[in-house]
Image (cartoon, rainbow, N blue to C red; front, top):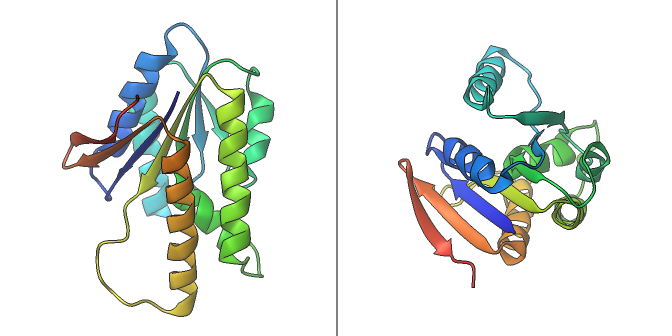
Length: 179
C-alpha cells in the first residue's frame, strides 16, 4: 500500500506519518528515508527533533538527500515499510544541489521514477510532502520552476497512492481512501 501525507509546515504530518508507518510495519523492517540536507543550526534542530520522535520505534534510517532509487539498495527487496520524508526537500536537493540548476521537468521525472521504484520494492510506502501552494504569492522564475516540479511530483505521488491524507493542525483529513 502507498500513502501520501501532506500538510503545511508544523501541521503534524511527520508524527502522523510515523504513527501510520509503525502500525503498517507490524513485524517487518521499518525504513526512514531522510532527504533533508543540513546547512545550519535550524536544520540540525529539525533533524534532531525528528530523530527524537522516531527513537525507539524501530526505524532504520537511510540518508538519501538525492538519487532516490539508491535508497532501495539499502532495503530488503519486497519487504518492509518505507517512510520517505520529504518530497519537498528531495525536489529542492535534486534541483539546486549542484552549481547548475537542474530543469524542473527533469527533476520531477527523476523523483517520480524513484518513488515508483520504492513502491515496487516495499510492502508499504509512505510519502510525506509539504503543501506550499496556497499562499497566492508570485515568485521569481527559479522558485516558480521548483513549485511546478514539486506540484508534478505531488500529483504523481497522489496518483500512485492508495490513500491520501492531509494533516491540518494535527488532524488527519482523508482526501483519497483505499478502495
